[in-house]
Image (cartoon, rainbow, N blue to C red; front, side, top):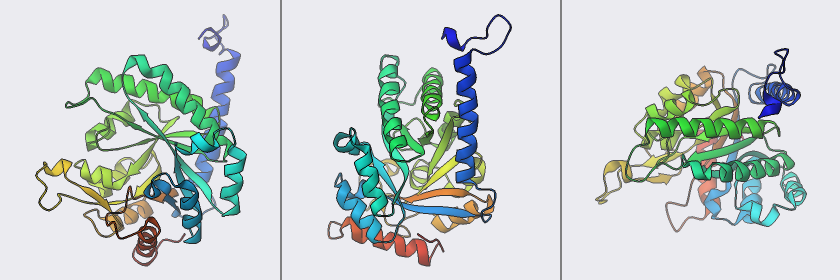
Length: 314
């Protein structure tokens, strides 16, 4: 962009300078919220994800608040209803005492023809998040079918995430990359590769401890490894392999309530305490593992574990 090039005296163009200053001040504000200087050495702001309710977002808001949570993660489906009326949704959240801790914006990939589409979509979502008073925008990535991404695809994805992250930060919203099964960041070294190829000043990590476990990693070890990039954690558990399932163990799994799977969730929280993490921790459960349990019942079980076993507060 011509207005982002240095002028004839070697100084940055006005737009680039303004963007850098805004990114710096916004980044500082986000850092102070995530890791406030005057707070206790460890502070995990606990919230709950609405995904378990399968799109019944109004019910999710009501029931998550009724359980005593003060933070929520919403998905991009709410844009269809409230995209033109964000003030209405913000008022509903505030009435229930809920802050938007993170927003699931959807996916990206390394297909060049779709880059502008992704930029436009996620910038639109970032404006929506800003209108709700939120600060974190989550993206996952969709890897090519039946093969690992190439080095060139990793580099293209890194550039795209950085581009989107710079643009969303202009709006006061930080991009967080969600490690995920079937994403570029599935295996531990793939997560590290995505982090390496993105600008740390504009792209942070959402560490999902169950996806990291299922991808072949140790989420406890992931905390110190990526501690300087983690802006938010998904507290989540997984059972794998499933009894009687003929799929390979890596593909045979089910997400379950905290403490009912194979993830060392207490070990993760201990590791977060050790690095003095101060940010959101969102409990996430994609769907009820038992059809007899409602999303609210699952959330109550998760809260009980978080409070009684992990020593966290809502």
